[in-house]
Image (cartoon, rainbow, N blue to C red; front, top):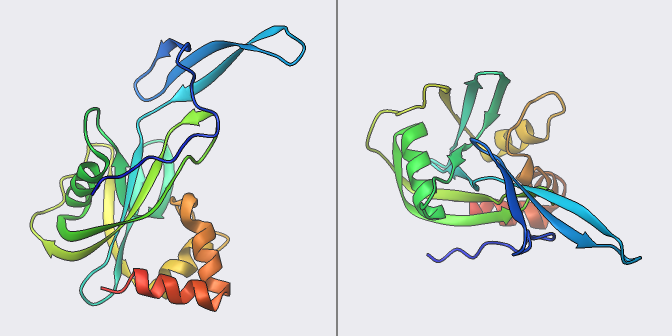
Amino acid sequence: MKIEPPKSKQPIPKNAKRVFKGVIFDVYQWEQEMFDGTKETFEKLKRPDTVVVFPVLPDGKIILTEQEQPSKKPFIGATGGRVDEGEGVLSAAKRELLEESGYEAEEFILWDAQHPTEKVDWIIYTFIAKGLKKVADMNLDSGEKIKLLPVTLDELIDMATRENTYFAEQQIVLKLFEAKYDKKKRKELNELFKP
């Protein structure tokens, strides 16, 4: 599966210089000519892309996670994480699914790919994984506490659209709201998440 990244609305130009290299974020700056002919320094952050995987069990339940991470309040979300340097997006999705759930999948469907903000060069790729098979125990990072939470599609939609729930995958909440209130969108989502 060849995955084309979506185009950024404000790409980092070729003449930009990296002025800071961080653990996750790098800062790029460039001189930009303004409409009146003056020049200003523009800057943008760059970070590794992220993969998010919604695994669908043979009974139709979707595996969510209840997670705790240092310096972050507990949240509900999908399996996923950063794409490692030199790693392909699909390989990262497979690796994160295995590490955070112990499952492998026969099929990965790219559901969404987007730049969540213009000021950061960063793409979130969201997958649906089907044909699951439990092959290992979870292999979590030292900064992760994860409990698997199998839910129905109705429960997923409810959790993601409920006011007081910290649902991590904000990039797809709009799609879930649409499915909650639009019968055609709900039918499409039912088909997408069918095991």
